[in-house]
Length: 355
Ligand SMILES: *Cc1c(COP(=O)(O)O)cnc(C)c1O
Image 1 (cartoon, protein in one colour):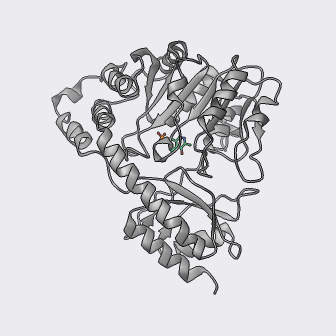
Image 2 (cartoon, rainbow, N blue to C red):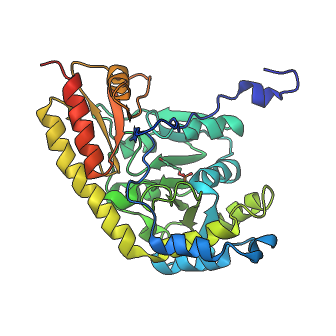
């Protein structure tokens, strides 16, 4: 605390990302990074752009990247926005599209950056509890008389549980006068994308990230897809904040990564297969794992708290995430790693579970 801090700053509780610590042979399963690495074409594109052109500012609108995204998803160029990670896009959404009289709605158990942005921009929120099985229930959102926007991930984080496209369509139908943001950071690992609905609903915005399924967390690129008027709104915020959020290397790497759909499919399928193999093995140890459509699982054991699992794994050089919060303090969130890492995880868990 300092006397120089604004009132807003004094009241902020910043987001805490998963630990990024450097310990030799640590198995890092705490921030949903991808074990398989980015497309080799993306790496080549980044290397090819490491040249004298870096003395020039990058294209401010990232037009070439937007064109590639539009082509891959079958939408128009003006229906695409790009940002420095989808987190930055979420920040612009809160400021530009969510700051209204009525509260913004999101699940009580969800991505913990949402309440941070709301506090930063002084936006009212209303948390909608997940149901007893930790699922999102659309009727609970529809029951609130007025909202300034709705946001949730599909599949949700940290639960990994998705909801069907028809449910999102039902929500959009009933909520035409405020923006619904579906955060599809994990959609490539098995959930249904709602990008196909953006032509039908001018209040739908879908965000994607290159950090998870495209294995480029270090490059910081995300994108949003929606009606051109929503995209124009985000451009206005961006151009009032930072004209060049994506550097030349990021634009080149992202464009090549998004073009390489084969790499995305292969690596995502490997992760889905590992997840499908890991869950029954955890069942056999007495774990209860929520059905996941993401590159992580949310799992609990009747005999050990989330914190005990976290600490017990950490002592064996495996890093996972637990959330010291009501209803989920028995759980840990574990990223699906390589097969080798999954095997090491199982071995470590066997050491912890009392016979
Ligand atoms: C990882 C994550 C993001 C942020 O992704 P970046 O593109 O790395 O900023 C957004 N939403 C959810 C739910 C996430 O888990």
